[in-house]
Length: 231
Image (spheres, rainbow, N blue to C red):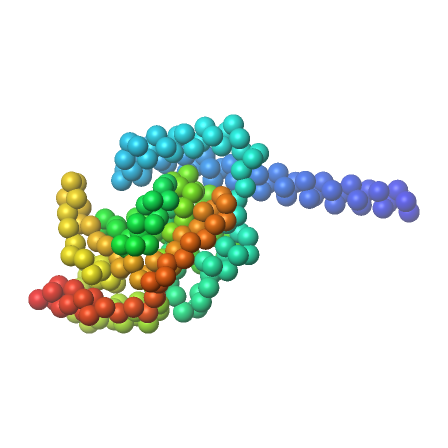
Protein backbone atom coordinates (compact mmCIF):
# COMPACT_ATOMS: atom_id res chain seq x y z
CA UNK A 1 0.00 0.00 0.00
CA UNK A 2 2.81 2.37 0.93
CA UNK A 3 4.57 1.56 -2.36
CA UNK A 4 1.41 2.39 -4.34
CA UNK A 5 1.08 5.74 -2.57
CA UNK A 6 4.70 6.61 -3.33
CA UNK A 7 4.22 5.65 -6.99
CA UNK A 8 1.05 7.74 -7.18
CA UNK A 9 2.84 10.75 -5.70
CA UNK A 10 5.68 10.33 -8.20
CA UNK A 11 3.22 10.18 -11.10
CA UNK A 12 1.46 13.34 -9.89
CA UNK A 13 4.81 15.12 -9.50
CA UNK A 14 5.83 14.12 -13.04
CA UNK A 15 2.53 15.35 -14.47
CA UNK A 16 2.87 18.70 -12.66
CA UNK A 17 6.47 19.08 -13.84
CA UNK A 18 5.43 18.22 -17.41
CA UNK A 19 2.75 20.92 -17.35
CA UNK A 20 5.28 23.42 -15.97
CA UNK A 21 7.74 22.64 -18.76
CA UNK A 22 4.98 23.01 -21.37
CA UNK A 23 4.03 26.45 -20.01
CA UNK A 24 7.67 27.58 -20.08
CA UNK A 25 8.09 26.30 -23.65
CA UNK A 26 4.93 28.12 -24.78
CA UNK A 27 6.15 31.39 -23.25
CA UNK A 28 9.52 31.04 -24.98
CA UNK A 29 7.87 30.29 -28.33
CA UNK A 30 5.70 33.40 -28.02
CA UNK A 31 8.77 35.50 -27.21
CA UNK A 32 10.75 34.05 -30.16
CA UNK A 33 7.86 34.60 -32.59
CA UNK A 34 7.39 38.17 -31.40
CA UNK A 35 11.11 38.91 -31.70
CA UNK A 36 11.39 37.46 -35.21
CA UNK A 37 8.40 39.49 -36.40
CA UNK A 38 9.83 42.75 -35.15
CA UNK A 39 13.33 42.15 -36.44
CA UNK A 40 12.03 41.04 -39.85
CA UNK A 41 10.35 44.40 -40.37
CA UNK A 42 6.70 43.47 -39.84
CA UNK A 43 6.34 46.36 -37.39
CA UNK A 44 7.49 48.87 -40.01
CA UNK A 45 5.91 51.80 -38.23
CA UNK A 46 8.56 51.67 -35.50
CA UNK A 47 11.41 54.12 -35.64
CA UNK A 48 15.08 53.15 -35.39
CA UNK A 49 15.19 54.57 -31.85
CA UNK A 50 12.28 52.33 -30.79
CA UNK A 51 13.92 49.27 -32.37
CA UNK A 52 17.20 50.00 -30.57
CA UNK A 53 15.29 50.38 -27.30
CA UNK A 54 13.58 47.06 -28.04
CA UNK A 55 16.95 45.33 -28.52
CA UNK A 56 18.28 46.92 -25.33
CA UNK A 57 15.24 45.58 -23.49
CA UNK A 58 16.00 42.06 -24.71
CA UNK A 59 19.58 42.36 -23.46
CA UNK A 60 18.43 43.57 -20.05
CA UNK A 61 15.95 40.72 -19.72
CA UNK A 62 18.56 38.11 -20.64
CA UNK A 63 20.86 39.44 -17.89
CA UNK A 64 18.44 40.26 -15.14
CA UNK A 65 15.26 38.31 -15.89
CA UNK A 66 15.19 36.79 -12.42
CA UNK A 67 14.78 40.26 -10.91
CA UNK A 68 11.83 41.35 -13.07
CA UNK A 69 8.31 41.17 -11.74
CA UNK A 70 5.15 41.41 -13.75
CA UNK A 71 2.09 42.97 -12.14
CA UNK A 72 -0.24 42.61 -15.12
CA UNK A 73 -2.36 39.79 -13.68
CA UNK A 74 -2.52 41.10 -10.13
CA UNK A 75 -6.08 41.74 -8.98
CA UNK A 76 -5.74 45.52 -8.70
CA UNK A 77 -4.47 45.72 -12.29
CA UNK A 78 -7.06 43.40 -13.83
CA UNK A 79 -9.85 45.14 -11.87
CA UNK A 80 -8.73 48.42 -13.41
CA UNK A 81 -8.54 46.99 -16.94
CA UNK A 82 -11.79 44.96 -16.84
CA UNK A 83 -13.94 47.44 -14.91
CA UNK A 84 -17.44 47.78 -16.48
CA UNK A 85 -16.34 45.30 -19.15
CA UNK A 86 -19.91 44.52 -20.30
CA UNK A 87 -20.55 48.21 -21.05
CA UNK A 88 -17.31 48.98 -22.89
CA UNK A 89 -15.02 48.22 -25.77
CA UNK A 90 -11.60 48.03 -24.13
CA UNK A 91 -8.22 48.31 -25.88
CA UNK A 92 -4.59 48.45 -24.79
CA UNK A 93 -1.56 50.15 -26.28
CA UNK A 94 2.09 50.06 -25.17
CA UNK A 95 4.49 52.98 -24.99
CA UNK A 96 8.12 53.26 -23.88
CA UNK A 97 8.19 56.53 -21.98
CA UNK A 98 5.95 57.68 -19.15
CA UNK A 99 6.00 61.17 -20.67
CA UNK A 100 4.29 59.73 -23.76
CA UNK A 101 1.71 57.97 -21.58
CA UNK A 102 0.92 61.24 -19.80
CA UNK A 103 0.69 63.04 -23.13
CA UNK A 104 -1.90 60.50 -24.32
CA UNK A 105 -3.94 61.08 -21.15
CA UNK A 106 -3.83 64.84 -21.71
CA UNK A 107 -4.28 65.05 -25.48
CA UNK A 108 -5.64 61.73 -26.74
CA UNK A 109 -4.38 58.73 -28.66
CA UNK A 110 -2.84 59.36 -32.09
CA UNK A 111 -2.97 56.59 -34.68
CA UNK A 112 -2.20 56.26 -38.37
CA UNK A 113 -4.99 55.12 -40.72
CA UNK A 114 -6.17 52.16 -38.62
CA UNK A 115 -6.71 52.28 -34.86
CA UNK A 116 -5.98 48.56 -34.66
CA UNK A 117 -2.37 48.78 -35.84
CA UNK A 118 -1.22 49.45 -32.28
CA UNK A 119 -4.37 49.10 -30.13
CA UNK A 120 -5.24 45.54 -29.10
CA UNK A 121 -8.80 44.61 -28.12
CA UNK A 122 -9.14 43.28 -24.57
CA UNK A 123 -11.33 40.30 -23.73
CA UNK A 124 -12.16 39.40 -20.15
CA UNK A 125 -9.82 36.42 -20.25
CA UNK A 126 -6.53 36.41 -18.35
CA UNK A 127 -4.91 33.87 -20.67
CA UNK A 128 -5.75 35.95 -23.75
CA UNK A 129 -4.50 39.06 -21.94
CA UNK A 130 -1.24 37.32 -21.03
CA UNK A 131 -0.63 36.07 -24.60
CA UNK A 132 -1.22 39.54 -26.07
CA UNK A 133 0.92 41.10 -23.36
CA UNK A 134 3.83 38.73 -24.00
CA UNK A 135 3.75 39.60 -27.69
CA UNK A 136 3.80 43.38 -27.09
CA UNK A 137 5.40 44.14 -23.72
CA UNK A 138 8.82 44.83 -25.26
CA UNK A 139 7.37 47.98 -26.82
CA UNK A 140 7.17 49.63 -23.42
CA UNK A 141 6.50 49.39 -19.69
CA UNK A 142 3.43 51.63 -19.91
CA UNK A 143 0.12 50.05 -20.87
CA UNK A 144 -2.45 52.60 -22.04
CA UNK A 145 -6.06 51.54 -21.38
CA UNK A 146 -8.63 52.88 -23.87
CA UNK A 147 -12.36 52.45 -23.19
CA UNK A 148 -15.27 53.44 -25.43
CA UNK A 149 -18.83 52.75 -24.30
CA UNK A 150 -20.95 50.31 -26.29
CA UNK A 151 -23.52 53.11 -26.69
CA UNK A 152 -21.02 55.29 -28.56
CA UNK A 153 -19.66 52.38 -30.63
CA UNK A 154 -23.12 51.18 -31.64
CA UNK A 155 -24.43 54.65 -32.47
CA UNK A 156 -21.56 55.67 -34.76
CA UNK A 157 -21.26 52.20 -36.30
CA UNK A 158 -24.96 52.39 -37.20
CA UNK A 159 -24.63 55.92 -38.61
CA UNK A 160 -21.63 54.85 -40.71
CA UNK A 161 -23.58 51.90 -42.08
CA UNK A 162 -26.64 54.07 -42.85
CA UNK A 163 -24.39 56.54 -44.69
CA UNK A 164 -22.85 53.72 -46.74
CA UNK A 165 -19.33 54.65 -45.64
CA UNK A 166 -17.01 51.68 -46.27
CA UNK A 167 -13.53 53.09 -45.76
CA UNK A 168 -13.82 54.25 -42.13
CA UNK A 169 -14.54 52.76 -38.71
CA UNK A 170 -16.19 54.43 -35.72
CA UNK A 171 -12.80 55.31 -34.15
CA UNK A 172 -12.01 57.65 -37.04
CA UNK A 173 -14.88 59.96 -36.04
CA UNK A 174 -14.19 60.19 -32.30
CA UNK A 175 -11.75 63.07 -32.63
CA UNK A 176 -12.02 66.78 -31.94
CA UNK A 177 -8.86 67.48 -33.93
CA UNK A 178 -8.85 67.49 -37.72
CA UNK A 179 -6.93 64.56 -39.25
CA UNK A 180 -3.53 65.40 -40.74
CA UNK A 181 -0.84 63.71 -42.83
CA UNK A 182 2.53 62.61 -41.47
CA UNK A 183 5.85 62.49 -43.34
CA UNK A 184 4.83 59.14 -44.88
CA UNK A 185 1.53 60.61 -46.09
CA UNK A 186 -0.39 58.45 -43.61
CA UNK A 187 -3.61 59.98 -42.33
CA UNK A 188 -3.24 60.65 -38.58
CA UNK A 189 -6.25 60.65 -36.26
CA UNK A 190 -6.37 61.69 -32.61
CA UNK A 191 -8.89 59.81 -30.49
CA UNK A 192 -10.32 62.11 -27.81
CA UNK A 193 -8.55 61.91 -24.44
CA UNK A 194 -11.96 61.34 -22.81
CA UNK A 195 -11.67 57.70 -23.92
CA UNK A 196 -8.29 57.22 -22.23
CA UNK A 197 -8.92 55.55 -18.88
CA UNK A 198 -5.30 55.82 -17.79
CA UNK A 199 -2.18 53.71 -17.86
CA UNK A 200 -0.49 50.90 -15.93
CA UNK A 201 3.22 50.29 -15.42
CA UNK A 202 3.09 46.53 -15.94
CA UNK A 203 6.40 46.02 -14.09
CA UNK A 204 5.67 48.00 -10.94
CA UNK A 205 1.87 47.81 -10.91
CA UNK A 206 1.51 51.60 -10.66
CA UNK A 207 -1.84 52.82 -12.01
CA UNK A 208 -2.39 56.39 -13.20
CA UNK A 209 -5.99 57.39 -13.90
CA UNK A 210 -7.25 60.06 -16.27
CA UNK A 211 -9.42 62.56 -14.36
CA UNK A 212 -11.19 63.48 -17.63
CA UNK A 213 -12.08 59.89 -18.53
CA UNK A 214 -15.64 59.54 -19.84
CA UNK A 215 -16.32 56.55 -22.10
CA UNK A 216 -19.81 57.88 -22.89
CA UNK A 217 -18.44 61.20 -24.16
CA UNK A 218 -20.22 62.36 -27.32
CA UNK A 219 -18.85 65.64 -28.60
CA UNK A 220 -20.85 67.64 -31.19
CA UNK A 221 -17.65 67.55 -33.26
CA UNK A 222 -18.03 63.77 -33.72
CA UNK A 223 -21.32 64.30 -35.52
CA UNK A 224 -19.80 67.05 -37.66
CA UNK A 225 -16.97 64.68 -38.65
CA UNK A 226 -19.59 62.24 -39.89
CA UNK A 227 -21.54 64.91 -41.80
CA UNK A 228 -18.36 66.15 -43.49
CA UNK A 229 -17.58 62.69 -44.79
CA UNK A 230 -21.16 62.18 -45.95
CA UNK A 231 -20.99 65.38 -47.98
